[in-house]
Length: 447
Image 1 (cartoon, rainbow, N blue to C red):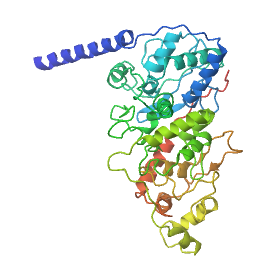
Image 2 (image 1 turned 90 degrees about the vertical axis):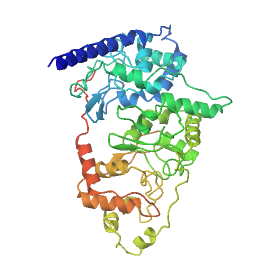
Image 3 (image 1 turned 180 degrees about the vertical axis):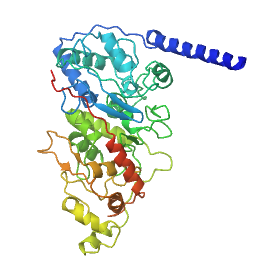
Image 4 (image 1 turned 45 degrees about the horizontal axis):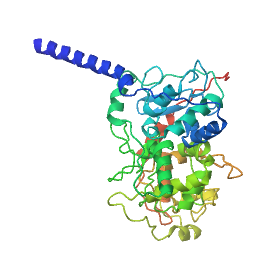
């Protein structure tokens, strides 16, 4: 009994010490960086607006149907929903009382003005490499041009003890140390710019890099093991592999990447889900030179070990069979009934309108989550100035699991495609994922 008491006391002391350490970290681990910023400088404000676009601030901090940057977007996690916060210059509910030092520390170091640590849903792990001049411009833009909106921030639905903030100090100590953007000697300035946008402002790794048990990104820049941007599942969407390898971007040209980022589509594929939000709020507004830099950098990422080969299609025997009225392959008849009106017998769709299924890397991706989700729930391409209209794909949730699985297996292995088998259990799992999508917070009387 005495031993148990001693262990309990030791545990309590250790927990108290950890708590005190966490409370003290904002003062010594993430000190404020004071600087003077002229928030009335028109050129600085204009630059800040561009930086905000490049940083994709709007996609997370604007709920569908809500005021811009007023927060309320529900982000799904395995434990509950985290809501994005109001980052308008409202002094009561937003960041209107933030000094530049407060702003910089929140964006790059993940600590709020009140010394509370932010959840890593905020990509400060990436933003830590954003340059001082860009952060200053961003501050000037938010304080001078963004409309102040009075909208309360919503608490997360994470259960106790996962909703406690102080342990995040330890998380940041382990996985989010301050670092600078590294420039290789004699580097190509275009590749350097692309790396800066991808690793920093664009925070592409936040979605496209796999995470560990503690929700940490397994790599924050190009690494020898090829984990960076090697693909990950987030909110039921598969953020595809962006490395120049087999099922990654080996089948994409630089021009196709640029076109996709500009408009959310190219001749073979289209953006749905979270990526559609990225295009709509962010990449469509970037200068072509920056999009070209991003594309070139992504194409420069070497393949992971064992995945050096370029993906090659098999012989297409599907088109001839369907056109001949041979629907004997499992899923073929259901495909003809539900899909051919848009995607056609040859699986090539209509360029920039209906995505192709033949040779589409989302179709034969390592993880079929995105393919399953868009089939069940449908989706809409982003609205951009690069196309006259957006297109909507209807959902097919009314079909039974076995039929959806048959159709998707037919698609993943038709027209020369080859991908792993999708099971009825996979479809059922995605239905549960969709059913638990968070409800965004948008007050009825928005100011």
